Image (tube, rainbow, N blue to C red; front, side, top):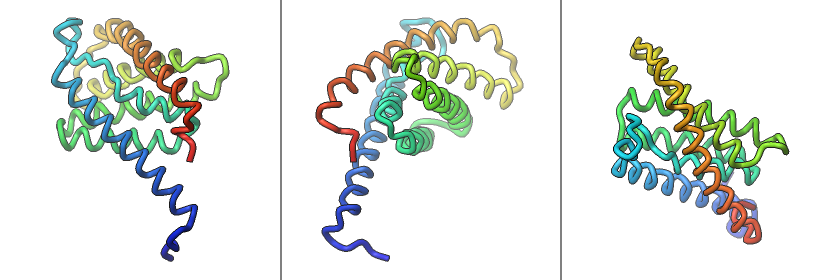
Amino acid sequence: MFAKQGDSRNKVNIKRLTVYAMFVAICLIIGYLENLLSITVLSGVPGAKLGLSNAMVLMLVYADDKKGAWGVNIARIVLSALLFGSPISFLFSLSGGLASLAVAHILSRLKSVSVIGASMASAVTHNVFQLLAATVFMGVSIAYYVPVLIVFGAVCGGVCGLFSQIVLNRTKSKNMFRF
């Protein structure tokens, strides 16, 4: 029932859990900073954020740790809602976050799709599913907002994908994602 001291499997699990906890913490810090430094003012797009915390999850997907990506993403969404959000923001984040991660997961299996391409598709999916959630939960049709969020999602997704690609390239030799 209990792991023996010195058991190598126990060390691997502790290392994995520690890395996931660091990823969640980094996601929360980035999300908090993005809320403080909202780019809505710069872009003129209400509710717009760069979404760098999604880049952390994307790195796990492309490091072939899909289960870890799902766990970190769900923990990030739940903790962000508890710390900084509301029940409605939780539902919006959950719908966008799960849909976008599903798209990244599927696209990561295709050799023809780069990290940047998957990030762009995920960001657009995130925005579309958040708008769908707004329509379902608030009963407000905001379809006019879709083209703006598609463009904005593609641009921000490209930035996040580039960031993810740079970090992945620099950490491959250090095996940061291998347990």
